[in-house]
Length: 406
Image (cartoon, rainbow, N blue to C red):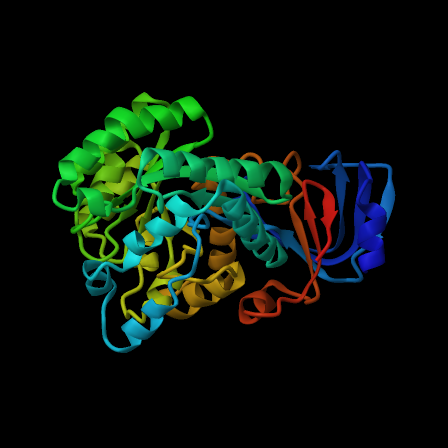
């Protein structure tokens, strides 16, 4: 199969044939659909109805879209492995942060690292994501927390994205925490964000989104609103870390500012969910973080779904509170702990995760006109995917119609 992958890398037009099952979310029907004994036409990296070109034999295997991961934090120097032992000894995420751990403990690594060092590290992390079937990924800053380091982090994302096959969508997260130099003057840091950092980010022109960690103990609703309103004025699309540990009113704020997504939501209120439903805000759920932090409360996926809210799934890959890079494992956690069906978890890892990035007309579904981001699996049916969590049975990956070496 590796020889076959190499031989089709430069094909402009080709046919994936002998597909046992092709499973994808269909935006027109609103359902996950499976077609048996079929083929798929690709031309110039796009799925088309008909094509004349070379044929690639899928040997009766399952074919799906590539995964889309709409919430990650990959720009950091080192993993915070010591925090795992601290949690095992009984310390909570909040207690670790109060003692100088957590987000702030990653600041020196990013501030002191060279751009080239960070590019190398992020490139290797993207290699692993792509190997595990993720073909589009959102990438946040948030470990520099000053203007220079945040702009450097965005530049790193941009440089890796220029040369890596995976598609990286950049998010500015300067409002991730209050850095030590502003520990006793939070409003001054908000001033810095609004008066200097956001204008500089907008002028740089890399970031698509602006995120805020709106949570008790981090950025309150008033501060978050000011930051996101400023971001909107500078052309950035708002999104939020919302109600992760407590109901802080962040879900309501997401609705008020027209955020594209509210993420986490383990402690979201009924009022918050209703406002999200009213404003069609996507809920991006991160069961890997709950699992990794040894917490018991997962986001209320079924209630969100019953209220008509679109659900995306993401890894929340970061140096401290979740080291997971596998979307199939995230699907597994969503099925086991949040009551989602395999089909729901799959749709939330492909099409609905793309909605959280405003790219639903480009990727996330194997339908005509979308990019040919495709996984050929060494399994027969969708139900087999969530239960392979380390060595994934992937035979071939195509990104923009190009076969990727694994």
